[in-house]
Image (cartoon, rainbow, N blue to C red):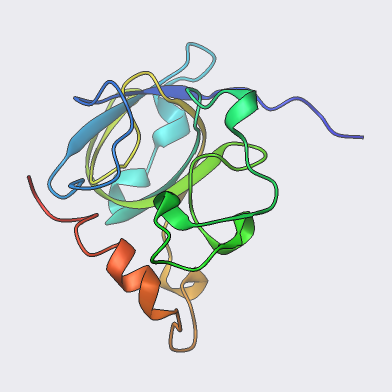
Length: 155
């Protein structure tokens, strides 16, 4: 049985709509829903980074991709399956980003470089622990380096 997933909070960010690049230096905050008190974030500030799992809420059902496509619709890059890329038009519209944790104030946390737009529903917050990061060298194709070249650059 699959249970319903609900937002545990919402992003407050300067960007109203998704963009492909220049997320470097962006700051955002996440306010927990009224169901949660400050104790839900207790001791989180002891971590340097958090992983934010969120919903790409602006993606319309008609835009969801289940097969292969060229990343960013760029024919110079190979057509690859939706699960071999991190595009927002995925079947369950779930995004995940590791962010630097700036501070926690009550039921709000402040992060740097969260690539989510204003009013994005947050599904979960997890502390980043080195033991959960890759234990071997990360391997990826050359086109993905080209795609990400300006993603974390500053405007």
